[in-house]
Length: 92
Image 1 (cartoon, rainbow, N blue to C red):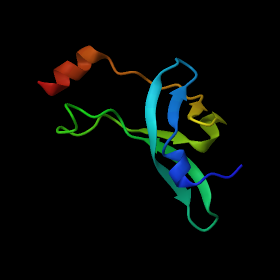
Image 2 (cartoon, rainbow, N blue to C red):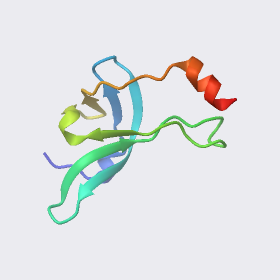
Image 3 (cartoon, helix red, strand yellow):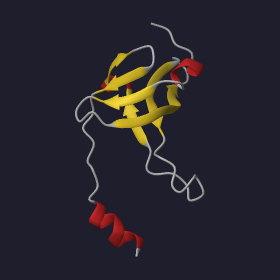
Image 4 (spheres, rainbow, N blue to C red):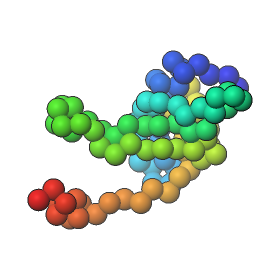
């Protein structure tokens, strides 16, 4: 199956473990001599209209991708969710 990077950028990434929508593919990690895709990168959500940067990005190894469809990519990767109470303490 062949894809262009342009086609991958339009696909939404969804984790099948919890049904969470991670976002759109933002970047691809390649191994240069072989031309092999190592992972895809999904940037986190924008904070306050993008003025204060973005949330954490997700680095998804190619082995975690279960299926690539016409408009979504299904992955199987357990992510550790951060506790919102700890986030508030760090900001203070």
